[in-house]
Image (tube, rainbow, N blue to C red; front, side, top):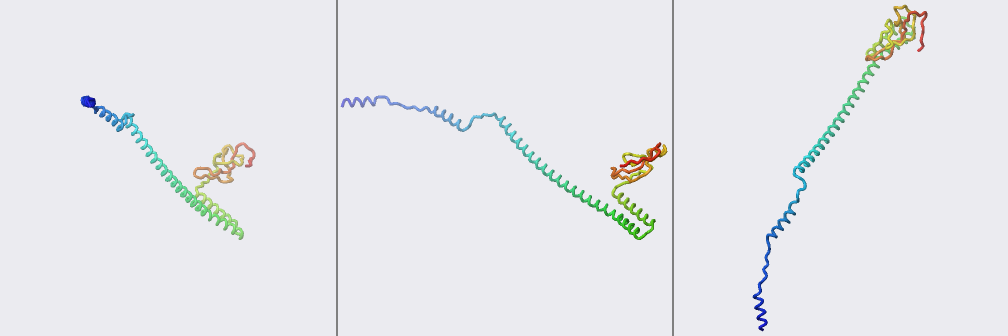
Length: 215
């Protein structure tokens, strides 16, 4: 019993262990862990991010402008095609009208030729036949003039290789050297351009006889 009492007394008199918690360490750990989880460290400066944002905005604006440009170009191409088609239709219509007018102007010439043939078949006078032919020629020349064809002067003019085609030559005096002495077929120009040259005879001084050049 004495042994038990001494052991009990010894236990009560022994100092008890006191646990101390360092709250400062806990707070420091919380702050460290909380800061790492709530905000990531910045890898780029702020002005670099602003430049990148402005670059993206400029690229988007350029894309918008390019799209608008493509749209305007397509509209312009469509309008150009429509104008070209209208001009082509107008040109075709004008050509048909002018062709019809020219053919209509030739119809009186055909009438005169038919009357000349009828007069010759009925034994008409030589003078009447000639008058009919002259009327036909005049009507045809008037039709050519209305179409814009102009006859070229030849006989008595100086020979011009740009306007005349020399078919043959004839001996003439020195004062008529290089002069057109006869016209075999009349030349014409239209709108300033030569339709065909006049086929002519040209005087040549010093020759004893005419020389004919086959075409």
